[in-house]
Every structure is written in C-alpha cells, then in structure tokens.
View 1: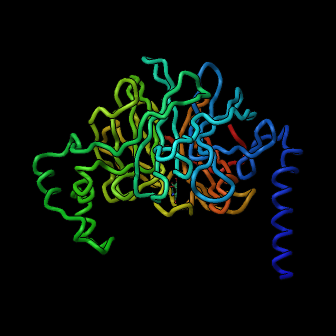
View 2: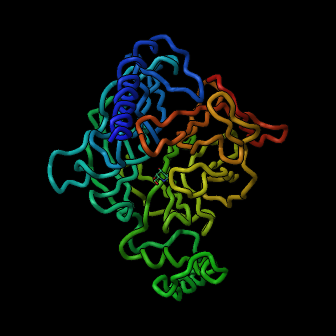
View 3: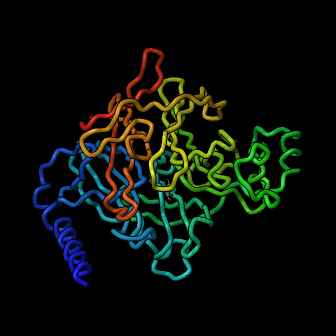
Length: 381
Ligand code: DGJ
C-alpha cells in the first residue's frame, strides 16, 4: 500500500514537472540533440515520424501527435512552423481524426510517418501517411492520402488503400512472375530458414497479396529534380521495400513500381539525391528499439540499389551513451536540405510515452568518394 502511494506520488510529481516546470525554463532554449525540444510555448515538440517542408521561406514540421500513453491516435497529425529551425510554433493539427464512427481515420486508428510535399501543378499540399485501422493492430497496412490548400491545413482526408492490387512490378520478367506464382506463403510456418528466404526473394508475399494489394507500413515520399514524386514503403510483412511512382497530382499511384532488397527487412526509409547519386538510409526491424542502420546507393530511383555499410560513426554522448551501430538510439524519419546541408532527421523513441520521444537531427557529411558519413553531434546545423 505504502509502495503504491509512493509510486503514485512520484508519478504525479513527474507529470507536474513535465507539464509545468519544463515550459517555464524552455522559452529560449537552444535545441540540442539528446534533450527535450521545447516549442515556442515551452512544450516538447510532439511531431514524430514526420518530415520538414520548406515553403515560402518558412519551414513546416509535420508529425505524429502522440498521446502521452498508448499507441493509438487521439488527435491527428501535428504541424509546427519556424523560420530558423530553432523556434517552432505549434500550428495545431494539420489533419484531424474523423468524428465519424467507421471512418478509416476514426479515433483509435494508428497514423504513422506522415510526409507532406508541395505539388506545383495543382498548387496543393499533399500528405501521405501510414494508416492502421482501429482495432486491427498493424494488419491493415495501408497508405492514406490527404490534401490541403494551406501548409498548416486543414488537410482533407481522401482515402486509404493498399498498393497495386493485380499488378506486378514493372521490372519482373515473365519467368520471374511464373516463379512467384509457384510460391505459397501458407505453407511456410518457420521464418528465416534458407528455403523460406529463397521463397521470399522469389516474391512469395507479393503473390500472397497480389489480388488484395500490397502492404504498406513505414513509408516516406521523395520528389525528384524533375518534379516526379515517389512513395517508398516497407511492404511484404516488412521484408521488402517497394518504390512506387505517384500520379501528377500526387494523390494516387501510376501503377509503376518495383522491389528493393527483397527479404532485407528494412524499415524507416529515408532518401535523398545528391547530384546523380540516390541514397537510401533505413533501419532494421526491431519495433521501437534501436538497431543498426542500413544504407543503399543507386544512380536511378529504380535502382539497382547496392547496399553499403551504415553511415553512422562514433558514439552518442550527452544524454546516454549510444553507439553508431544502434543509430545513436534513434530511427530515421526523413532527410531534408537546409541550404546545401542534408539533415538526417530521426526519433529516439520512448515507447512508454511516445509523446516524449526525443528528436535527433544530424548533418550528413561526405567522404572523399562522396559517400555519406553521419557522426554524432549535439549541435544542430
Ligand atoms: C517501428 C516503426 O518504424 C515505427 O514507425 C512503428 O511502426 C513501430 N515500429 C511500431 O512497433
């Protein structure tokens, strides 16, 4: 009983410190990796798994607004604005959950990894995000689309869908398709055997989901120099990445897609282009726990992609020691450009209190051969 009262007291004190004291000291804090990042009202920025969009000299930061406890959504997708990447004003919810029972985005669904891009042709802001339907854990594995005339919203939810029902990747030959059709996912109960991996690489889960549409969980979007946009997602039970071309208005898929690293189990894709080089940095698949990042290089968005060692070097200090082979305790969410610097943006997840997950922004350096290197630093660029 005594222990219970003490625990309760401690919990109340922690909540009070979080809600009252943090804002009081936070007004003019310089944002540093490894610490809480207060917004202009002093509250830790609650925008996770998101991205930064620069528009008319203002940076907009979109992300999951997480409740303090639990994994499902009770608000929607948050947006903050800044002119210097240091002082962030909370602009409220860019996309709100629907009050309509049965809506794809009703309270209790899961929205993750929202990304907003600007469509020059339609003069609209387009948001894509990972959506899980209420009460179904992570099995729906859909992508959601929303659109807005203004960067801060309100975004209008359009629909959610799985990907490419009834379509094969554009680069699969007739022979590859025949081999995929011979696979049978229902026959494999044990994962990670060499035989199972060989079936996965032939497209076993692609074939299983062929009619109903491919799964889409962790995702990002990328606008290439010619204005074409692509959706990159963790599909096939998180085993294989799919790269898919979006239509001119960014609100649908053209149907052209291919697979990257089948069986590689890559999550949290982040991509950027520097000159003629495309770089894709992903995590492994260990839930909220950190793991070693993976990096891929290609000369075209359609590959072929070559895997290289993780770009992270050194050890994180200043909040807790975390080595480069754990991505400094973080998982990537986006890579954006400030002037000429590419910035890797990540979350240091706190699964007990997702809202309190820390943010990590690291400038990307390049070695003599132009390969990305990402050392630890507490200072933001
Ligand atoms: C890792 C993903 O990257 C996150 O976005 C989230 O889906 C967690 N898994 C859930 O366990």
